[in-house]
Length: 107
Image (cartoon, rainbow, N blue to C red; front, side):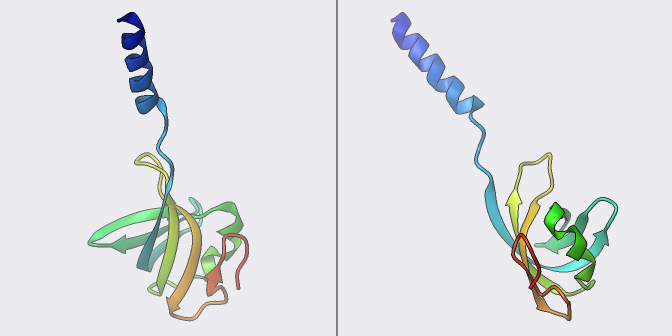
């Protein structure tokens, strides 16, 4: 009986303690605002406005995204306490010298 209780307790602890894997999501949104100091971009989807974080590799290119342009952002969802992190972007409308960011460089 004690072995069964320990096994059940161990199983429950692994369910609670093991972190969930990050999920990738795509947001097709206009660029509302670019906060260069905080390395974040304000976007909106489904009547929600929120920031997405710009990774180090994209920081030199973030000012190339024109305000109001429609962009397809692929982001890594990192939980409620951190904003989503940009993995890639594709500018769908508007002019930019960085139409596609692949996670490492602009094309």
